[in-house]
Image 1: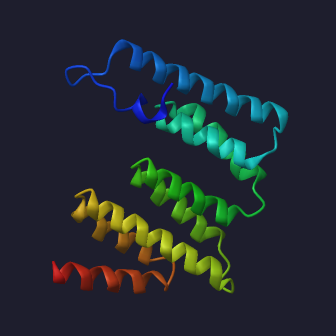
Image 2: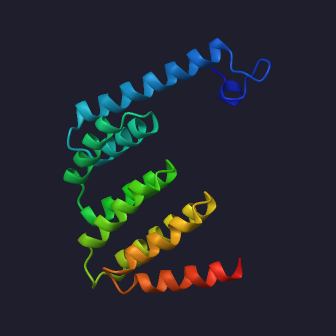
Length: 168
């Protein structure tokens, strides 16, 4: 299948049956490869997070949550794993799940790890920016206030958000 044309082929502004079959074949092959990777290395966190991502993207949330948990179980750094999951959920346009993972990462964090704190704040900023870009402006302020409570560093993000809101 020609990669350049696979997603762009259209007949009268609709995908042809051949295109739909090609996409279905690609999805099935991807799922087989991910399952095979887990079969070969059942404790490989990367294989589990990739499968979880695939399953979430295709609407199989229940099975995806199972692989999310396996990813966390096998990851060397739970805090970092939660942040990676938050970014995955943002890519899937699931800010509700991203927020949950950010909160979990915050609970796992150690105050002395400045690199982790910076990554945590960066992921939070990405959450807020994504919510804003998706037109969920009222939700953003509520999200920021809720996340502000457990950790003083969030106040910086809250202040930045309020300054940015006043400019709009």
